Image (cartoon, rainbow, N blue to C red; front, side):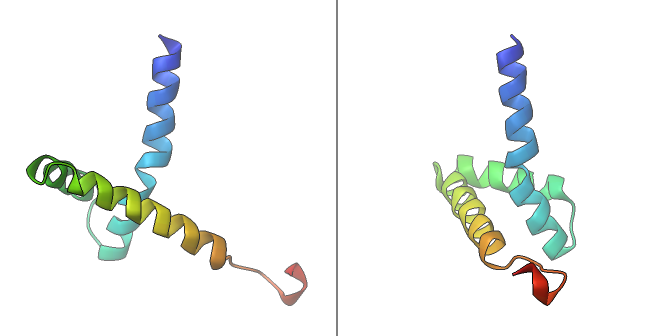
Length: 75
């Protein structure tokens, strides 16, 4: 049973990062964004989930490309 909770914790911690970042960008609650993705997934038979995965991939690539450096010597 702990494997289930460890998996659930992993997805809650990592999976909702996309929703939180979108919500911060739009200035709304993350709960609203999560609920929208859930309804979009059910209404369009999986398009919301595909959109969520695309956004997660895009944010990961953006983080890898645009890293914040504190000084010139961090290269």
